Amino acid sequence: MKKVFISDLHLNDDQPLITSMFKSYLESLIKNNKDDIELYIIGDLFESWVGDDHETPLHQYIKSALLELTTSNIKTYFLYGNRDFLIGNKFLEETGVELISDPYVFTYKNKKVLVSHGDEFCIDDTEYQMFRKIVRNKDWQKDFLGFPISKRLKIAGEAKDASQNSKEKKSMTIMDVNQATIEKVINAHQVDLIIHGHTHRPAKHIIESNNHYCERFVLGDWTDESVIILDWSNEDPVLIDLIN
Image (cartoon, rainbow, N blue to C red; front, side, top):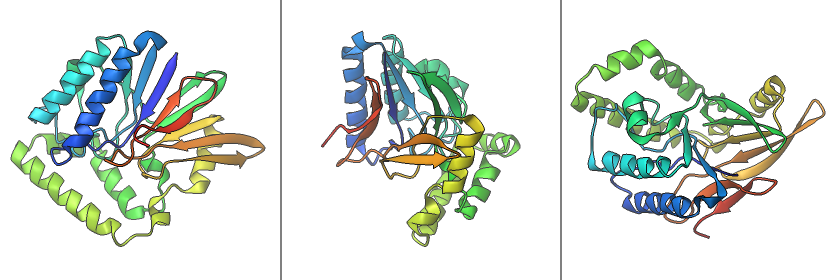
């Protein structure tokens, strides 16, 4: 079996090359499915998602590509990112993708693995964590999805602009994961591997906590210069740049 993990594609109409690369990558998985492949999309597949009822040519194109993947017997899992947490049952039914919880814990090749989008680990960014708590509230989501699509798009656009302005004033340290939080997660779940995205800082880290060693793999965002995936075909997972 081969497990592949991707994150932070942020698909949108302004980046057609990323969409094209994603489609090509899915086609390559279908072509090589003799290896029994599983794909994990761990958040922020889309730059924005305001509800399953907002249909665009891009959304239809991606849903069609994912359906082709899952009907080719490639099990595909998805967990929410901070951009597309409003993806719902309609999207899942139309693509055959399976929603998994965050964090998602499983055992593979004698290793206990925890998969997360990663934004919950960034507790030093208190402003973002307050925002996250609000928008992940089910009552807030129900009210938001009850608005006309035009209003939802306006709110999402304003939130994106505010987020960008806020990021420009914050240090990278504040927006990165908190080390103590990572150690708490390791001790709580007794995992050997953590795989996450969100921070756009691809790397492999080794953490020692209470005489227990854990590897933390950070995925990168997809750009026209770098496409980072985590490929677990052999005994150990490896970060690969599909472009370089």
